[in-house]
Image 1: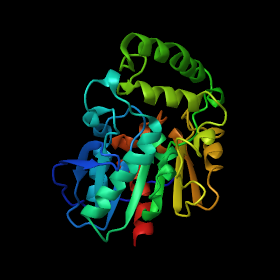
Image 2 (image 1 turned 30 degrees about the vertical axis):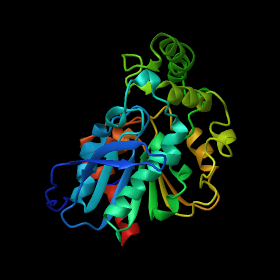
Image 3 (image 1 turned 180 degrees about the vertical axis):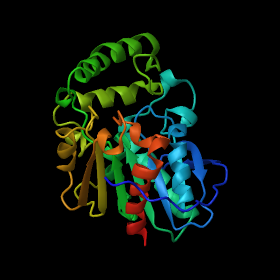
Length: 299
């Protein structure tokens, strides 16, 4: 990867605007909209499990500087979209994909009609993007650190930490609290019981979500997705690794897939991992290259 040339001075970005929008089942979701001064397109950013929408704000601001109205938001049962006590929240992970992600996409396209839209999905947000029944409305999809999450295909010692999470910490905290809390063991946002249970099912069987494509994920568009996909993974990521990423891509039959693998040494850094793409240190490298790819699909 060659060094990036100095970028032109970006346009200033207005402060994020709090927004709410409604999924087709009536669930209200909350997030932040970063509007570009002179918009050329739209970006719906679908986050990873347990990552609050604020985690993505700096990258979203960069997207707005590059001319894209960008939406970051929380899935039902999490963060700003949580309604009521967490222990009684009925959310599932399949609902994030079938209802919440499509609602975000529709919100942007209704608010800014006529502009091309691209989804950016981190981890689960990329993995389940084509489960959206309206995914064809997007011009292209960027999938960052996205793969299946089968624990046995993750390297040691990470796989043993994953096993502890799936079989010890998660079930124990559900029994005691009724949800999976943020803690030194699980550093993500607290998760509703239904989200954890479905996620555990997917990550503890080799077929991952495959058996649920006709049931909980009915209406998915994996086989129909024909849009360009940028599938970008990182060599030091124990989750989206050279075994698990190709297994996810087997669900696609028509998509035009471009794969990229980046090693920390390519950027002169010690670590990228599963979440490092979103570090501001990569503004002139990873961020810029991702937006260059998006620009070429929105021209």
